[in-house]
Image (cartoon, rainbow, N blue to C red; front, side, top):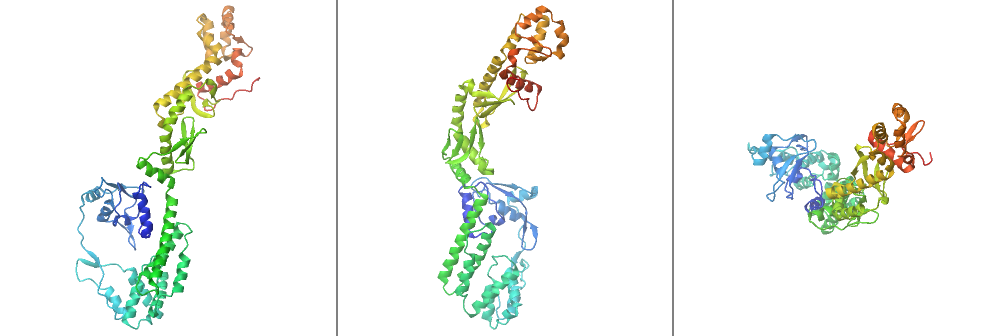
Amino acid sequence: MGALSPRTRNAQVAMYQNGEVDFLVATDAIGMGLNLDIRHIAFSGTEKFDGRRYRPLFPHGLGQIAGRAGRHTEPGTFGVTGDASPLDEGLIDAIENHRFQPIARLMWRNAALEFGTVERLIASLEAAPQSEWLSRGREADDLRALKTLTSMPEIRDMLTHPKDVRLLWDVCRIPDFRSISAAEHATLLARIFGFLRVGTVPGDWLRKQIERIDKTQGDIDTLSKRLAFIRTWTYVAQRSGWVSDESHWRAETRAVEDRLSDALHAALTQRFVDRRTSVLLRRLKQKESLLAEVNDKGEVTVEGEFAGRLEGFRFHADPNATGDEAKMLSRAAYEALRPEFHLRADRFYNAPDTELDFTEQGGLMWGSSAVGKLVKGTEPLKPGVEAFVDEEAGPDIAEKVRRRLQHFIDRKIATAFEPLQALKNDETLTGLARGFAFRLVEALGVLPREGVANEVKELDQEARGLLRKHGVRFGQFTIFQPALLKPAPTRLRLVLWGLDQGLAEFPESPPPGW
């Protein structure tokens, strides 16, 4: 923005030019001569405050700003963002083809000033132009300050000679960097005029003003205010004859302004830019290789900075990183994780079943890392699996992990439900016995008797004998296979039943011995 000191503004611009940041947020001051490597201009608004009111930007003003993009070095585009309304098609065409209404009138102020009296000075400043192509500009800050000071009796009494009027006008031209209020600015100008009329600005008084400002602690607003204050004294020190030791005060005020500018730049950068991300961004743009590592705990570091943790085959970025920082860390981390994903997938595929397990809610674990979950299949005893693998790892890794998990759960079911599988595959079972076996398989080896009371009555002794060979027991309330009531099959049966029923939460298995 235009209110920044040149040093702060240039430092901020350098960050953008060096590729340390992707975006630059600016006022329309960017359209007044900053030639940057900008590919796109996005207007967040198409109005501006002109000192008195908000008015729409003129087409040629929009064109001047939009013209920052490209600058004949690469294609440039422009558009809107935020709350800005879409640009009119005719306006877009005018900007793209540089077709603007010719300037009908120029703002003008008289340069031939008269210093005989303050009234003559004011009259010359308010003189009307003599050409129809010129229009007198609105009342400027310096003229307003002149009118305010000459209304003060103590100042009026000092204006005894044309040189006093000229000096007063020079003082009124001190820019209002502080922008506190017109009255506050006029009070400061009156004090300076009083000093200059009899000599120079006293060194002791000026030193106290500067010492109050020369502090680099504080937030952005505080530093901005101090910087505005010191720029007033930098301006005063640059005027010939206004201070006694000009070289000393010019160096002193410039040094303080530089210190405050640097502090403001650091505060702005700390507030809006993450240095860690900036370094990564610049190196990635320059296609430099980044040093990234994964330790035995799954902690991922990039250039020595903690980037996140690899749990199984999913990368979880540092929760303290947000926005662009998180994106950049993830991007750099995945560069390092590509070979790690392949190594892990090979190690996982060859891992024994003893390293894998399932949870009571259908999760699939590799040690302490979640690597997938069970999903409903075509039959209760044939569930599918969903692997937890980051998309960046690639489809080959995801398929390898999925196959290994499927092999694990298939073997787990085959082992735990071996009696039930044998019952299902026994081709000697026919008639009612085979139908009853099918019902028992559907119920995963434990069938409430009340639901099949009629079928039980219809079973003859031969059918019952065939079922008992497979360990089927006809209890008073339940028909079951005792081997499936052990803790391991019970735990797996509850998970498979919950999947088949589409439950959001599966029932927990009872403690062993119940």
